[in-house]
Image (spheres, one colour):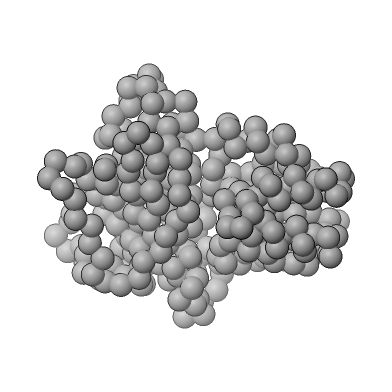
Length: 119
Length: 161
């Protein structure tokens, strides 16, 4: 089923890659944010089905953004996609309320299969 | 390689970074990387134009850099994004080399996390230009890898500060 997706990442290349993968699979990218604060703002305005969230970003990092989004919408579906795949980050992400944790590098299969796991 | 994570040497960490670079390039672009640890005679060092670097923060910090010629980073990003090479902007080329170094450093970070070599990472920084050179004081270790991808060239270096 097609999903509306918000991408939150400070890398234009990652936006480009995710958009290409998601749109080829029939999903809609409804918004692009380049830091956690923009991501929180756009989440409130767009109410996407799923958020792809980086961790290390300026102004507000991904963990804080997940906590803020979760506080306003406990049912938010958030996929954390980061190069920082160590246990400490994974624990923080889990406690913040991340639905799925993915490590970069990624390919199309990793992205689409993660989306398919979401209700 | 030793199974004792606390006894990992600089050389072993460097080998992990080389493996991580191969893995990142293969996963993200489908391209195979050939890595030489001695500079091949015809390797065009003066054509390097795009560099990304990150500081690995720990008791003894390090700097990891990945540099590429313009054709190399354009080709890699073209394979990654599906765009024609000349459709990629300068911003995307700079961002692309930063993402490479971010993913390589991030992949090894998770493997060293519970060792004495565990590190934090700064945000990646891009530098563009053909004259970028790091100059270190005598006695500081430097590791260089000369990477060939689809006939094109990248260089990865680790500076132990």
